[in-house]
Image (cartoon, rainbow, N blue to C red; front, side, top):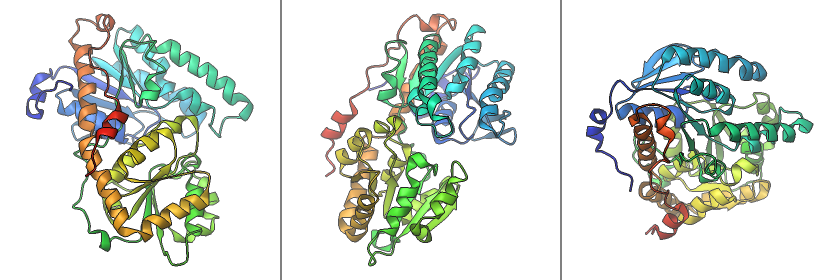
Length: 416
């Protein structure tokens, strides 16, 4: 296991003078991974934490100092202008370590390294695979651009102090290029909003999806599937999150199933917790893009934590969790009827569905906790900041033991 001090001693273990700044030009200021997990964890550990993000004001929330950066509404202008704004503010912050989260900030990271700073790159996704499927990029430019950006990313990472990858699949792209590459997964935090479990028989006949409502999340397919449910199943589909792009909502609303949809928009974590506590199935139907095949979105663990059975795309990453713990069903994300059949099965088999949900909840407690991931991140920071200089921090590979094979953990997990 990873060595870590008791929570009560953490704040005295790190020097308060060590200042960490997280940078993002793409993600929301209260992003789950960045703010609620990483920033909160390192603040609890005793570091002085600042987050530079597109926010409407300067404030301190839960001990984390939020500093707004200029972010144009137009995507191309954001890519060109936001890094400049972040770099200027970064120089003013003069932190001991900078931790950035977006590929478009790689030039900022390189400039900070030239200035002698410790810099960590947090890779949330396979950027070249992601570009190849961006709908707003002209089709003829996608693959050439993906190759160029991917090559630039791979050439750049060796200059950073460390790389943090969200999945093992992402980390494999960097292991041969950087000795300090660790995997910090998006497992649920035990200090998230949790409610006493609502009795299954009192829950509404509803399915829920929380998160970004975009084409790659198959939102239109979900709404179409609800329209295909048998007449004897009067179910509601709750959608919580923003549409991206906003025009996508009009396309989704054209579906016959829209009349069964309760669209909530963006809601606070406490409302999400109440929503999950009242539903009977959580949906995570991603489109078969390269980035989705081995990904395991945070929402799956949120569903499991809330004792909700899960219906997910039949991809390797999803299969490892859902089938490995017997907490739900897997479907072809392109087959609306198969999605509808899975929803109908869950809603018409309440006892089996309840047991699926309980198995998922037990698995989160036993195997999928942010606590283990937090330890890896804090150990990385300790090693980088304990060196005499930013340059000497990179002379030796990180001493963190190899990650436990998650599939072996699941196979050894007994849901009974």
